[in-house]
Structures are given as structure tokens and as C-alpha cells.
Image (cartoon, rainbow, N blue to C red):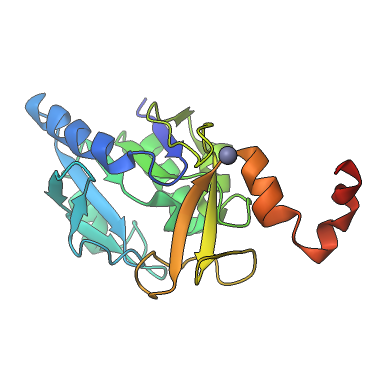
Length: 207
Ligand SMILES: [Zn+2]
């Protein structure tokens, strides 16, 4: 049985630097790969870029309204052994369900690479569905570090250099100049992002 596997990390956790060589390794073993990117992620255009400078052209853009089960996409998937998805947290729950069914009914392995939580510290809809349905969920071995030196598991958003907790879930770094992201550990996320919120005052007792 082909598996659905979700690989996750915080931002700057080296997802692309694992996805790209994994695709080449599969091809060296005579596996046909289909590399997918959510249309929302326009960074790198139709390439997946790793920070180390590696790049790989994608085979399929998938928009929010698109289905993996459209005739056109199914004809690609029938010719595929493994589907690799970059920035998989940007899929819809429905698309994750389609991928799960594809792995089970068509015996095509599906590897999603994405974030676990958004800048508010909550699961993305797609990540949640991957955690619920995937045969395996694996944390990527490359661990991003917080500015304090601890391991980072949160993705904080900065707007004009200030930590933000409100706003739209999906804003790509660089697509609006003033928005950047920073990996933070739990302690720094609590201090910088959570405690400054009014409705989190009850936690201040611990100060
Ligand atoms: Zn920290």
C-alpha cells in the first residue's frame, strides 16, 4: 500500500533542501515523480528553490479551486509513482483528502512538505488534515533555531518589524514588503507574540 506522509518543520527548516534531492533519488530508482506547488506560493515562480541554491522545476500548480481528481490532473497522476508537494500547508482540506484517497486507491505515494502551525501558533487547515489522515507524520531533521539559540517550532510574523497576531493566514514573505517571518522557540513565542495580546492577560500571573 502506498503511503501518505507529511513532513513538517518550522519555517527555514530546510524543507526544500530535502524535497529536491529526494525527488532526484526517486528518479534514480526509476520512480516517476510529480512535483506540485500550491498556486498561492508564487515565490520562485515555477521552481522550488532551496536556500543552498538547488532548484527544481515543478510539474503542476494547484489552486484553491483545483481538484487533483480533474481529468487533466488524473492523467498526470496515472503516470506517476510519487507525488511531492511543496508548501503543502497551503492546500485545502479537501485536496488533502483527495491525496489520501489517491495514495490508497491508485497506489501512488504522496509526500507533503509543509509547516505545522501558522503565525498564530495554530495548525493550518491542511496540516490538521495531514495529521489526521497521513500514514506517517515526520518532523524534518533540520531544526531551525530561534534567535535565543533554542530550537524553533513557531513561525512568528513581523509587520514593519513588530510581532503580529492578527491578519490573514496566508501571506507569503516578500509579497508585501513589510511582512517577514521569524522562527521562534516556545518561550520566545509566548513572551513576544502571545502575552502582548489583551485576551492572554490571564497568563501574566506567571510573571
Ligand atoms: Zn527563543
